[in-house]
Image (cartoon, rainbow, N blue to C red; front, side, top):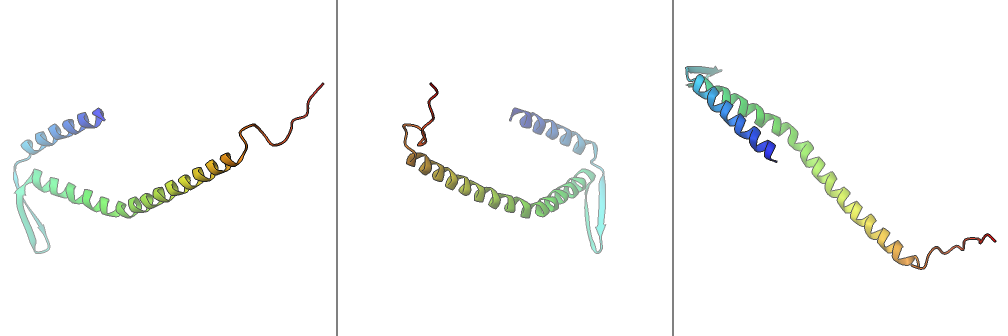
Length: 103
């Protein structure tokens, strides 16, 4: 857990250094839409949109896996209840079959 915190702080420091070094203004044009801003902001928006698109593509598999996990938990609980019921039916004194004695 602490590793993620350290990695997050390092990523934040690197991001701030990147922004401070790339402050030159640029214009981005896409069809009739254009946007003016610093290079760092434009690159950050491009990165954020890529992350967002990736998450949207991964979302169906996350949802499917969550449903599968929930179903498996219910199945495990049912099997554990069945095992407990079977164990209570078996007498606690030992096995029902007598073992032969060697003399």
